[in-house]
Image (cartoon, rainbow, N blue to C red; front, side, top):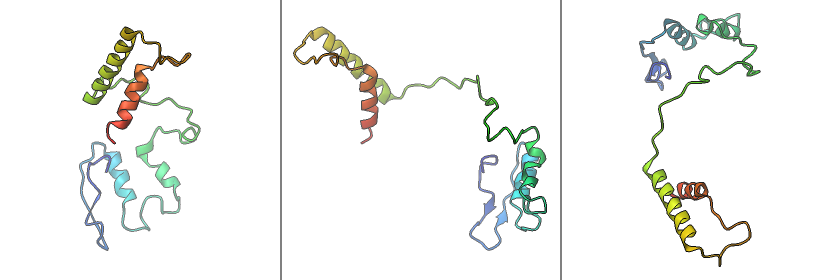
Length: 137
């Protein structure tokens, strides 16, 4: 489903679901998916005499060092990649403006009547977080 965009079978509730043909970008991915979804358990990948090792040995996984996977001893292929810049949502922009307004008003008032020791400042990020947590309640 991740590679093709749709579920692999039409009418999966039927006794013998029909495999829905997909156009995979990678022929090795196509081969792996079809072998894993084989309806006949005697010929399905991973169910033969080689057991689960058949899945690991499929050419789609060529280059994967399976001993390193559980150790997490390899760099992410996404390391160093930067996605598109995220635009702030309208709610977050509003929360930042509220926090800035509150901070500005507190700075102008100079009212120390409610100041308690070192707790006389509320971080704008705390106000934003509180606002974002409660906006959808």
